[in-house]
Length: 382
Length: 219
Image 1 (cartoon, rainbow over the protein chains, first blue to last red):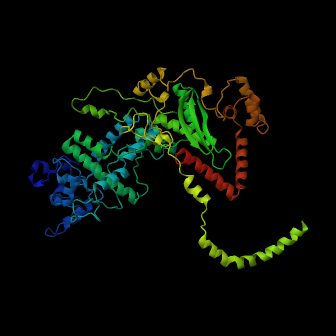
Image 2 (image 1 turned 90 degrees about the vertical axis):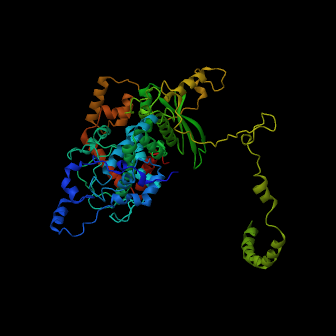
């Protein structure tokens, strides 16, 4: 592995992009007053009254000028095998959460939002092509299992990201700057806010698709209850992963970021068969067979043992005509039949065209083979 | 008979004495004789010495010594939902085409015979399922509604279903009871549930929880 020499990098790479975040032209006064961070308007007013020769207030997060000296940052850069195009300063910025520094010009909000859209896009296109028959509710949960905050926190922990005891100017910039404060500025949420008058039953799956955020979660204008410590922590750690991905996209482009998402997020294993929860599996299977024009499902007793004992085992198979759909075992005839119905339904929902599915973004590569339409299912069983 | 019943208490009186007197002698004898008999060895060693199943042994079909052979002997296990059954495969899936080709070749032992009778399949289970008859007309349904409205107590769901030869679900949909009757029924059930003891209540809750776990695939 080559040693990273930030001192040899060109000045162009080290400069922060002037268009990043909110345009600098919008807050010239604030930026002139405190080039490294923001303070609220009231704090700024109080600083004008103080004499000029007093020391400036400490920055909420470490200065980017110290990023090149941080061993932790260089180690993280090398560990992730990031391209040399990504400066250490950007990596340092990815570690500053909005809870430490509220200024979007110096925290990772914008990078994290960019990264989250990229991660969600790649995971969703993979899921839809890999398991085309997954119901929408399961698809949301599968997306959350890959790209949710809790999973991204695990990814960040495996990268070796550690949080500082408290954010501040003197802290090593290679540590995650995060604190569980009272007021959290979350500006990476995207979705429609529903009116408070809408009754609870209006929250169907179709409205979740249209109105809510990427994971089908409701976006509320008011934070009714204070989020828990664990939620805030996973959000902070998850934002690091998203911000690093956003930085890779900004500096290196589409191909690199796709390879990175594939190797760090899509490589994680998920068994979607554990996500299902059925209500009336026998009826659902009967409706599926009626919809698809198969013969009505019939349960057949394949084998049994110990019918008169305390622990009998029955193996039941579900057949449609002469074709077997699924098989289940249980301690009673009824339980075994329901297990078999659930196994058949899972076999329907978890149909996969293969392990090496092509996704639409594969067509962006040069010299890609002509696109063949993937399998598209007609929809859920109603 | 009388003599024996008389003698037994006397012998029971004597036994503790006998045990006391023979205890030191018994301790001496156990030193020389092993407590493990032939039967124990046979049961724990010899009877358990079973030759492995043929499927665990290397293949003998080729000349000895055979070349490297793979022993494939997976344990019996539940089928994975990742294996899509034949009729669930979409029309243009390569697996479907391959299985169709496999089934059409008659020489193959796994060939699917379309004329195979249902006798070769496992026996059908008996359970309640939908068997539509479509035997009711508009007049029948009106009559059913009239009866249910006139005297819901006499013309219960079960009774109407038996009279019109349809399912109880159909009766509930086509001729729902008047709201007062439903309210009365609900109150009756609630009064009944109040009388349940802690054991019955807990058992009912457990059953509900077990069903939920079953549907989540945790059981």
